[in-house]
Image 1 (spheres, each protein chain N blue to C red):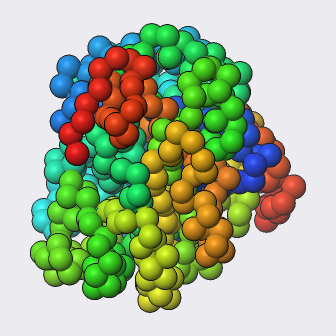
Image 2: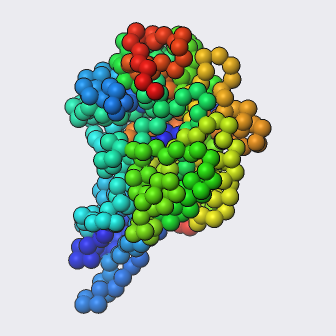
Image 3: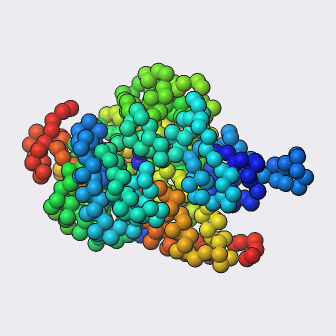
Length: 215
Length: 263
């Protein structure tokens, strides 16, 4: 599925938000792909992702890198989230040189991803997927400010009520912004939640919402 | 997902964790005056497991019982930890464009169109999934469904998009219809989706996939701009690093060396 697509936000907001996926192909290179996926994951880890995980095992906020690595099997799809363009360029340079062999996908602002590829000497994007937005009963969606946070988890494991709770928790002094974002990162099993962006979004949200009581 | 009434103390800590909204309600224990517990609305719950994984319940009252058909489809479609055996891919869809560099699933001149009902965070009943699926198939515009996709698997008739009757009342956090057609049919597909959007009682997110040619503009862009359809500034991009590379053009040569031509 397209769990790293449909992230909401404008260009400025999304310019340092990248999800890098490593995916073996069923029927082509899936059989025996485990060492390749582990190599891909290890390379990604060296470049300092803000989040990293595998859908079935969890991410580095609810388990360890060693656990994620040890549970990689043939067919495991792994994800690494980066909050810095330069890290993505250096990662692509190493992937180009070492070529683990599985498919590599990057979700991010299209022209910035293309620039990163150019700087890494990779040429043009191979295939591309656009979001055409949300259709239907859009009046049922939460505020856009909340949507920017909830859509970071494509499986919708971060609900809008949870984001509101986090705002309340910060305002009532129960948790720090960082603690709230790590709690949300734990729920997004795959590791697609960008903690750096999450902190910024939550800080931006704080003045927009009132709480009934500070206790 | 259920809360064990014998254990639950109605502290409501699980309330905000549910992606489907507030689907819990307080019930009075008829045997013990003053004791309350919460009950999860089974109709609204998609068995995604977030509340359980959050480990927020102080008395471990939450539990996921093993469900039978058709209820089990909720967990299959909503809990990312459960793999749909038909696609062999964890999650709700297929590999779609993620492996296009080695599989050649989307060739030049083709467009992949995915319609994910219930996303983001609203949830969808399969009766709404059927409305969209049948509208696409009825139009006879050459929209071919992805065979390994769970929704395709749940269809009784893949030529009409009709889903199994027993599923229509089931709900998922989201369910995606995936397929492809010729690029020139994209305006018709989008018109059908525009009409379907007025009929469903949920939201859906639409995505389009294309092979980017070695030169020139992305083929989707002029079509979307002519139609005035909004498309995102961010996208999902295949880097073309998979081996063995699928050969899309006769003159193409893979950087990794090996190439595969198996249309």
